[in-house]
Length: 465
Image (cartoon, rainbow, N blue to C red; front, top):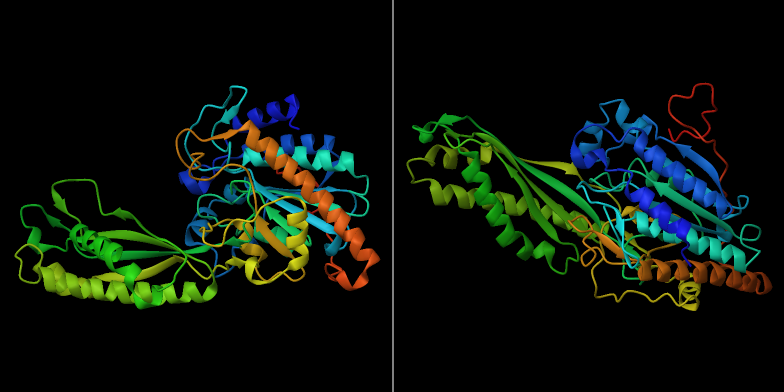
């Protein structure tokens, strides 16, 4: 199903660095993401999809309490948002939401240089499976479906969001979320992420806590004179690792916790009085997230008491022990984000569309993961799931040697084709049987403009502010 032109497109995308500046903390990707999205839009045009919107997000997208602190910090550089466009494509004219299928895929990647190669069986390179490979296979599937069913683009509209801001902890706050809020959604929404070709109608969100110690430094010859943030934070890291998971409020929690980012300094001959420790906690729904906040606060307080009891009688750490609670603050870099639980909504119609297309559902016992699908939480008259080729772990996403098998891309393209044909068939069946109508929301997407940076005089209708 994927043609030599598709292979060439994927290699070109893999060779275009689109590392999220949230990953590097350095300069933004500038024109690289614009370049990758233009190449994608050109290939999509050959499949019949037209550009509806191509624009960088406006600064207003960041004026929210739930925007991660790291995103707000990065956006202090005016070039940051200008280099983070998102693209919306559509097959056919705008249709009501109930007659629209939306696919979302991200073209930004995590950091790490990976040579782009194709040996005839697998593609390697940063973004191969997460998610440039799925993006190319998606176009092949849409193209095949449109060739098989002339109603696609007439009776059924197909939207494709190719977004920025998925990686690096950006959480879709300036990529996917503005597009969802602008109405670029469908009755059925598929977020293209590696799920082993099984659809997953769940997505966790995550919160990030920062334990910050603000004490006084000391010379290594007189360590007792200062506050030893290295020992205090190291103790708290181990305490959290041992005790947080067993807090009563964490009973039955689906999301994992990651203790990471411990830093005080680099030298061996001084006592560092300041430092920080990061804790990232995933959660499956708002109630679990609120319980995790309480549990973390309680566990930190218990850990500080345990540290004081353990080190109060020592020579070098007595001052740190006595003042540990006063020195340590629990701050939140990120919290309050929604989580997706479409599996709880009982959407029989959408589930039947997926089942008729032969798309298996991931077992409920298997864990979900965090992705931009969280922004579909609470959107009326929609069903959202996550589906894509490969797996995050076995295909080395976010690690050295990232790859995706051509056979998996072919299988995903076939799933996209079958899904669109199934949606069209069942929409027709609903027209014949009004009581089985898939949804009554009448919103449709309004066309934007093809906006690029540095081109004055164009309409601002495509801006995401």
